[in-house]
Image (cartoon, rainbow, N blue to C red; front, side, top):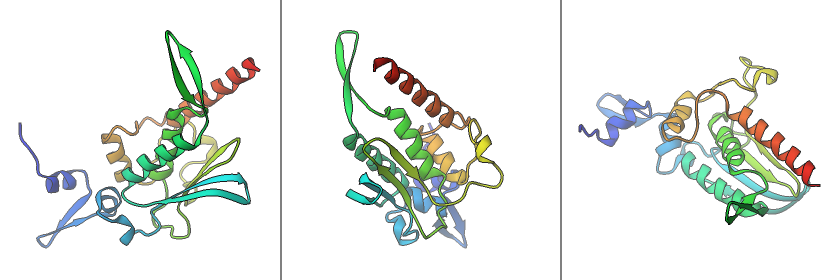
Length: 196
């Protein structure tokens, strides 16, 4: 098998450019693989907030590092702050989060991948309220796609970042993620209504 060095791999995935005999990480390369991306992009952070109500913060955590580090740490934080309940399937009990892990992962990865990294006034924010969770990211919805057409469409604000997340098996590129989130949550609401 032919082995590529890291420099060649980074160049192949458009995270590195060579100019005048020097190697430079692209913006995507800095955000994904840089030793300290916040030196160049101080706004590239995730703020996690546990809220009692819209005016009262119980806990706050600001995550820095690569986008992969932010996604992984955010996911662990969310899992640690959401309620779980036991479900018995077959012979064994397992604890299931009140919001399915798939939904958390999909919304979290979308918020990080599709934010506007040149918008300096805000970062990705995730607010955990007693009965809901809110994901937000900086940047308007693209004029190329309306909110009505967001479901089932694949629009990548940051195509190189999305491509690397796809290669790392964090996402698919068919535009079905939000549709699956919607379907999963609708099924949970129906099931919850039947239980009560």
